[in-house]
Image (tube, rainbow, N blue to C red; front, side):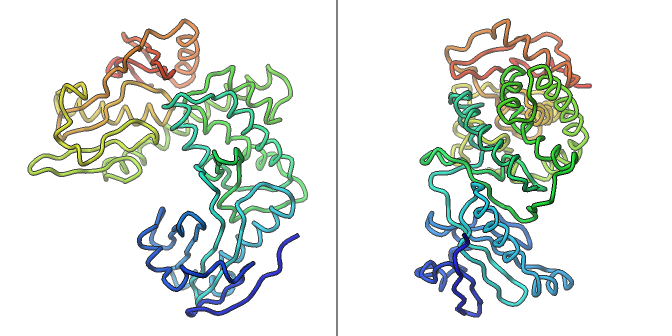
Length: 390
């Protein structure tokens, strides 16, 4: 059952918290933590950590209507109550410790999950670009998803970035549960929203792996249905990515930090790729000294061709097709590609078959290039100049 809350006022904030001692040592200087340990921010919301012990979500509404609404229905209170309800129902969720309000502003306090990363980030860093065991991880992740699907709760923003994986505890937990509800029964549309989460792992997953994962999640009960679910859903997912790419392209061209880090060195401008997460990159302090033939394959092209190749790489990544990646774009016309790792071989016939299946669904045309397999099991396109997209 939910713990009884202690109510107290401190520094103008009214707290509802499971243990007042949890505020000791940090809350008197919370603004300092917010500035120095902020991990996510937008104009109205910030998320910061407290020495690896807690996560704090701070809400500061800007519009008058939202300010008034927040005074009567603070988001932190709503999310806290949802977290407690999930915990009471036995759903694995980060522990919700308390919430506070100061006028229209509010904050939510949750426990940090030890040595954890989001499922999305773990998959990209350790499986796609690392050499982790995808089979063992997928078995455990499927068990978590199956339990959540059976819980009766509906999460309107259910994706792999909202699920943490703790390497230390080998466990999963939901985060960001605002908006979660418990309807009498999930509609077909709500179930589809939940089930779409399997396509978050399209990067690095083949049809056989996907079908087994879908079966273990309990989404489908037989192999042929699981394969059909994957193929039909992946086709829809590819269309969604392509349709949304113009928006992403604007963000890339505006140096949106999720995608690009812009560095100026004297009269030279460098764009450092930051997407997808887990891709081996370059530290900005290494610019421009390490940008040479010893570390990268340097390709100079006409400006328009260089820009087209740079943006094509982003689109291929969003679609889930690995390739020898341009890591840095020196404007206006020089690309620095990652070097082919040692012990790289040509991809197997099975790798090529899996690739061709996904390429056909995506409308990706291969003109004249090879597929390679690296020592850490990346299967990648050798030359994206020979790849067409329809």
